[in-house]
Length: 118
Image: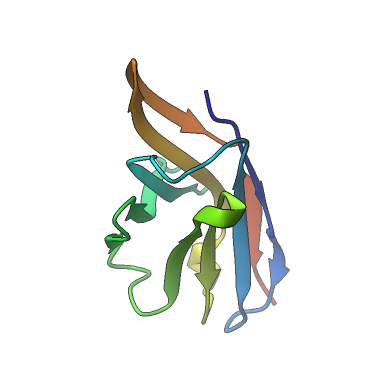
């Protein structure tokens, strides 16, 4: 099954930008959906953005107009460009892949910390 490794997290000031990357261990061309989720301390994990294999995208209302998800099939990588970051965006961000291959797979990366603070 595919393995996912996130990178690009860090500390940024409010209003700043970060780009997260999710590198897959094999081709993502046929993966039905790849997404980014986040979990803040004391809160449930929530969907941030998802992109289908047909490049259809969906975003949480809280990030619409600020975040952009994209995929580069040639590099087996999914990105999350985050602009105009706010303190409430602080969380651990997780990459996710959902696909069918013999059975349904729901795969998670290890997460990357994003902290938005002065």
